[in-house]
Image (cartoon, rainbow, N blue to C red; front, side, top):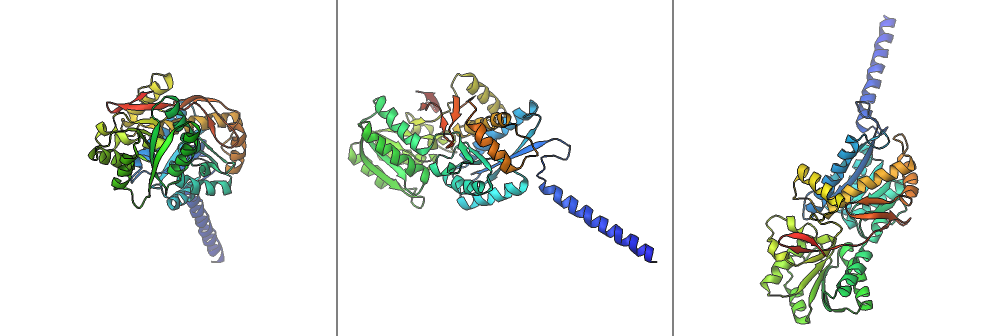
Amino acid sequence: MKMKKVIAALLALTMVALCFAACGSNSDTTGSTSNGEVTLKIGGSGPLTGDYAQYGNGVKNGAQLAVDEINAAGGVNGIKLEFKLEDDEGSQEKAVNAYNVLKDWGMKLSIGTVTSDACIAFQGEASRDNMFVLTPSATAVEAISGDNAFRVCFSDPNQGVASADYIADNNVAKKVAVIYDSSNSYSSGIYEKFNAEAKVKGLEVVTAQSFTSDNNEDFSAQLQAVKSSGAELVFLPIYYSEAALILKQAQNAALDVKYFGCDGLDGILTMANFDKSLAEGVMLLTPFAANATDEYTVNFVKKYSEKYGTDTMNQFAADAYDAIYIIKAAIEKAGITADMSASDICDAMKTAMTQITVDGVTGTGIHWTADGEPSKAPKAVVIKAGAYQAL
C-alpha cells in the first residue's frame, strides 16, 4: 500500500513539473522555436490605429518585408529573425505597456517606436534594461537619449535646420509663417531650430502660430493671422492629419501661399477621403519618393507594392525597411549569437553601429556617431498630380 502511495506521489510531482515546463515555453527567450530554428526577436510599437495609423502600419509592413527577405536568404549568420509591432496609438503610457509585453515575448533587440513622444517613454524603459533600440522615425532628441539608442531618420533639430537652409538656398520664399503644435515635442522641436536657422539664413518669420492636441481641428484664427502677415510660404512641422485640415481650411479662406513641411506630412496622400489636389505644390523633406529611379527604391517599391499595395507605402515604411537591414549589418559586424542576453547584445551593437556604413532606400553611405545620429544627405520632394516628385 505504501509503495502505491509513493508511486502515486512521484507521478503527481512529474505531472506538476511537466505543467510548469509547458507554461514556461510560452515565454521562451532562449532563441529557439518549436521547430528547432535559432531566432532573434525584434520588437517595437507604433500607432496601428488612430490618427497616425498611416505611420505605424507603414513601419510594420516595411520592417516585416525586410525580415521576410532576410529569413528567405538564410537569416543572419544562420539566425532567423522574428518581428512584432505592438499598437501604442502614439501614447507614452501605451508604449511602456507595449515594451513590457514585448519583453515578456522575448524581445532582444528593438526598433523602438514610430512617434517621438512614445519613443521617449519606450526608450527610457529600454535604457534601464540596456536593450538596443534603432528607431526608424522618432525624431525628438530625447527619443534616443540613452547610449543604447540610435535612429534612421533625421532628428528634429536637423530637420528644422535643413528646412530653413533649403528654403533660403533655393529662393523658395523670403517671408515665412509657421503653424506648429506646441504640445508635441516633434513639432515644437523642429520649429525652434527652424526659427533660429531662419535668422541666420536671412528668412523673415513673419508670424508663428501654435495649436495643441486639445485644439487641433479649427485653424481659422491661425490662418487669418497668416493671411494678415504677408507670408509667401507656410512652414508646417506637423503631422499629416492636422496638415490635411489646414490645407482644406486654407482653400476655404482663399489663402494663396506655398507650403513646406517635414517627414510628418508623409502619409497625407494616402489618407482616406483626402482630396489630393489640396496638396498640389506642397514641398517637404522626406528621404523617400516612390518614383525615384535608384536601384534600392525601385526594388523596395516593387516588393512592397506586391505584398501590401501602396496605401501604407510612405517614408515610414522605407525607414523601417532600412532599419531591419541596418540591424542585420550591425549583428554581422558584432558577431551576435542568439544565446546572448539582451544586455550583451546591446553592448556589442553599440560599438558595431559606429563601424558600419549602409546603403538603403532612405540614403546611401549612411553611418552613425556614438550619440545615435545618422549621417546622410537630406532630400526634398514636391507633390505633383497626387505623387511625390524629387526636387
